[in-house]
Amino acid sequence: MEQKKKKRNLVLSVGALLVVLLLFFSVYYFFFLPGKGKDGAPGEPGTSILLEDIIIFDGTNSQVTYSQQNTCETTIAVNPNDPMNVVAGANDYTTPTGDSWCGAYWSRDGGKTWGQTLIPGYRGGPVSVLTGYGIAGDPVVVFDSDGNVYMAGLAARRKQVSPFRPLQKMSCIWVAKSSDGGETWGQVRQVATSISAVNFHDKEWLTCDPNDGTLYVTWTVFNFLSASEIVCARSTNGGNTWGDYVVISEFTGGETQVQGSYPVVDDDGVLHVVWIGYSPGSIRYSRSTDKGLSFSPAKDIAPCQPISYHQDPNTYRTPTMPALAVDRSGLDTHGNLYVTWPDNVNGDADILMCSSYDGGDSWTEPIRVNNDTVGNGAPQFFPSISVSPQGYVCTIFYDMRDDPEGIMLHIYFALSMDGGLNFSLQFNITNVQFNGENSAGSFLGQLTSSDHTAFIGDYIQVDTNKDGAYACWCDVRNGSPSNYNSDVYFAFVGFESVNYNATAGEV
Ligand SMILES: [Ca+2]
Ligand SMILES: [Ca+2]
Ligand SMILES: [Ca+2]
Image (cartoon, rainbow, N blue to C red; front, side, top):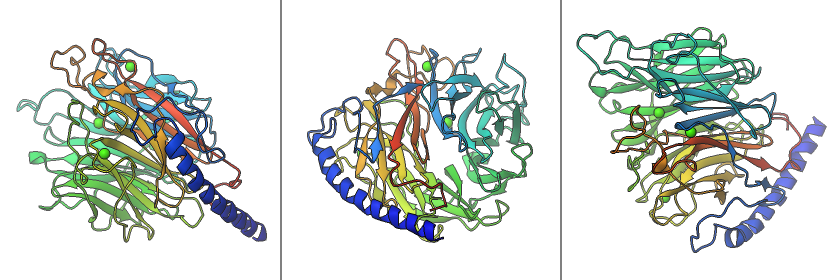
């Protein structure tokens, strides 16, 4: 106990010192580091060390996928028992049909090099419960505390709804399991299946309670006339079987256009879920205190002005969806919830975030995360958020601030060390700029279409552990107007460790 108290005091005093250092280095970094000047000069390749002793980033971007096809819509998780084992996923078009499936990628050297495979069930591939579906997508990966890794996704048919096939199973939500660090995925289970062609399952997200291994999937069910609802299902046996889903959103006049659910579990086992309601725009929230069996009435926690569906002149879509994270640090910020989303309130796409310090009862006013000039016309979108065991709030997002033309993309990393109050530390982690228009379309056949519509997925992701942040994104540096091609890329942003020598919850 005494030792723990000493540790806490040490952490606090070193923390205070770090704040001072941070203020100093913020000035240094704003004015002197490449790509951060007031003139808005294009970002340079990653700087070798940023904020010495706090954040270490060597500028490396690792290529995760190498095919000539698109790989986009990326997810990532680091093994809690082995920081060298990182698993990622994406919509992956390297199938025999050339259409989308879910790719899984694994690294055993902390993200430097990667292997790749496809979840079983694609046409021409190994059989699984997904065999017969033409496409799959929307992957999300998460580890449990035993080091098993799970991927959730959807599978669907391209065929149009037909009066001759009224009961066709149009789509399903599935979860696959790997017990060898992401290399093989022998267990694939369906969580829910369409009961008719007018009933479509979409845009799931997956989380795991590390304390008891319960898995939760939330997703959107589209019903008649495109009305939608947010639902949740759980598994208490490692994804082997799944319970019936529970409806979370309220199927009333005010909430029939919902999408983009994102669940997390806090250290007390409470399941928190956010999503977006489009009419009118708001970030919605509900929680379950009985492990997903029932949910509190949905409520607004912030207004939201969805960003435009395309960022002119670019053709790829940029849907507005939230991401959620919870603090498990054991420090003063323990239990904090942070939700982030792209928002047009300032006239162009910005990243907003609001926080709850009381387990979701109340939420702060939204703050603007990206720190370029307000109203400068530069779009930021696809925010992802993760809280490290030190309580560092980490976000990544696409950012066009370094291209006045609004075409070339960077990935920015933004860090808050004060419980989400301030993201003054942020920088570009991509070592090239790239043009999202050089990605292939989302549908089979658009690879060579003259009316090309690009596609870079609907989200990217960052995960954290005490060592740092593990970011992956859809990158189009290998594409060109004559050779549409996107790939998954990865970067690691390291945290200093001098103020941290305990595992989460121990301090
Ligand atoms: Ca590729
Ligand atoms: Ca998608
Ligand atoms: Ca902006």
